[in-house]
Image 1 (spheres, helix red, strand yellow):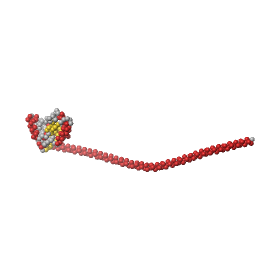
Image 2: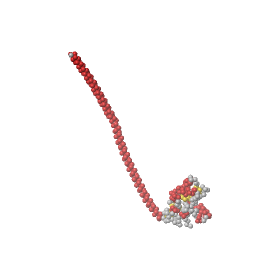
Image 3: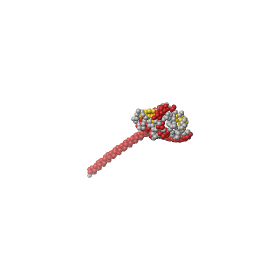
Image 4: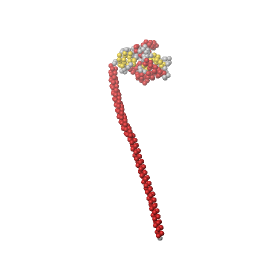
Length: 335
């Protein structure tokens, strides 16, 4: 019995000892785990603090670095704003100047136009009044002086030479002084050369057959025509001495390449000259169906130089106007 109790006590103490050892071991393990966890936590906090500190330092450094940049940006923005302001001000000033110039120019133009219109009106009025004060040209009393034509042009006769606006006039009613010229003018020769060059490009040739003619030569020609024809017919194609345009040195008779004979209506040159001579300052002086105005039959070879401006007017888009029609002048012999 005593042994049995002893054995039971011994077993009890063994179990108790094992329980104690197990408990101690378990506590040690738990304590180690807690210590390890705490240590890990401490290390994480320390690293976190270090990272936080580094981050702050980095931000501080970046801020320091960026601060000048921000200042530069602010300075640049300020400078840009000033520049933009100056540009806007300059643009406004330029716009104002331009508008002022435009307004001034427009007003000046309007004023000039008004003054020109007034001046023109006054000049026209004065000219009209002056013209009305001049006597109407009378072919029965031709002498030096200033006259008014039927179309209200001023006819000036000086030293036996008649002219209107610088264009010399000679016809059956208006004779000319023998001193008017002695040859073709250089201006006319140059104009003819230009016209000659133009027509040659069309495969045609022209040449001056007769240019300046003095009184003596005209008298011989007129007498020869009278010897073979009656006076009435002769004076429709030949002028009396002193009444020929050839005396002016501004009229030419044009021939073709057919043995230099005078241009005939059927010649190709005739049509070309009739349609183009005005471009070079020449007019077809005696067109077809104008005998009642000029006193002469059609002469497709006879051209008179009057300058491009008047030539274009008289060309009249192909429906030629004579000097007599345009100026309102007569052309007939008194006897």
